[in-house]
Length: 636
Image 1 (cartoon, rainbow, N blue to C red):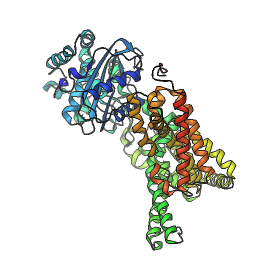
Image 2: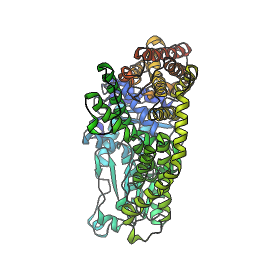
Image 3: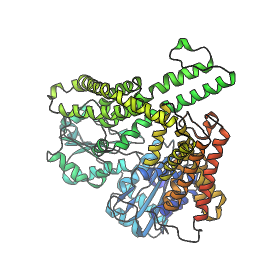
């Protein structure tokens, strides 16, 4: 399949009217919709925004390639847009973008589609080709340029030669990006092109959406001078143990190929000693060491399925027990299961929820120290659980284990290479578990006393104090639409669930549902103030809000941040305060409308709190928002 099977005259716009990044994305998405390529415009735009939030697709040299693979796409396609004046797209080189290629791939996109899309990205690194695109006068000419380039470039890709196989490649490389569509192949082509200019033989493995292509072989690794990993996804670097290894983000592969190659050729690349783990890129590893929030969220992400599944089963078991007038006692062994309600409680409380704290601690430690941190973290988390240090103890155990293993790695950095195989199977688990265990033994008791005191304090609060906590937690859920404040409040709610206090999480979920529901309601009540794309986004926000996904309000917040954030914070705070005024508790930490019947308290009052908060957000924003005729604030 050729690029021009996906890029047609109908999806070419040579005169973009947009002056901001968001407007460009809207205009190109609408081009795809008019061409009949999308199932759901609003859902596709949400997917594009999600990809942009991970890293900019403005690759520099005046080119941007926003892209997404989603069920909102009916048929794979490419929309091309051109802006003579240029648009600030937060590009990697800080310069305006003029050429925009919006890639739409179906969720189940086949290999031929994805290969055609990757071919597009390789064309765009050529300056002369970009210049031709800037001077073309008709959509048909644009399509013809790609046909011409397809013919010229058919056999240009660097290929193995018998000589290469015999003597091996001087440099090997691996590229990969989160979606595996554009950046993966652009980095590969940039490295190949620069290596050819420098007279260096190179082989590049691409970890794209269609799978791993051009896989590096053990004998090639053995003969190579060094390896470059230019990737923004997890890459297994264990096969490169003992070889000079350069690790960098995939964007460096596109922007700085010569620097990466020089680092290997000049002998500046560090030799990878290996530790038995799958390792992120250097940029990501550095971030892991410094970013406490990211490490915490890694633990929470892996813990959440245990909490959600277990919490809902426990809530259902209490409903059944109440209906059947059965006294539900804690069950710790199969022999204690005598009816369906106690079976659900045994599965949820005695097993799923029991794993919550060890899983949290284990994956926090793994985020810090990679795979060697998992076992010490889980052991530390289990010790926190069994000594009543609770969720707080699990948090401390995770970070303690992670940094302990990092210290052990550093202490053994000069271990003889012949004994490296002992590190992952003996040294790291033995010393990591031992040191973490000793430290947790020493600090578990004071942590336990603190947790008990905090739980007792929360349990003794009167209605007015509970409402204040609800206002604060609800407001935190609405102030940054899924950002750090939102996640801190959510984590606190889960901590309180593990301590047996279900009030805070009720405020958290009510506050988190309000932003998308409130913005969706605003698009309904004040439809004349929103364009078609925003009204479509409102329909999606109804669904996301009902499912307790605060990020559903992000498209609105990105376009009009001040008004949206103020409106959502007010509505979320009121919803959280009302939930606790009504003395609502929530055992399941997630689930949105699907778990409202499972709350401790009156489900109708809880639903009323969410509706009131959403309505206040909708009215605040709808009245405050400027009419469509007036220019909205530019993207910040």
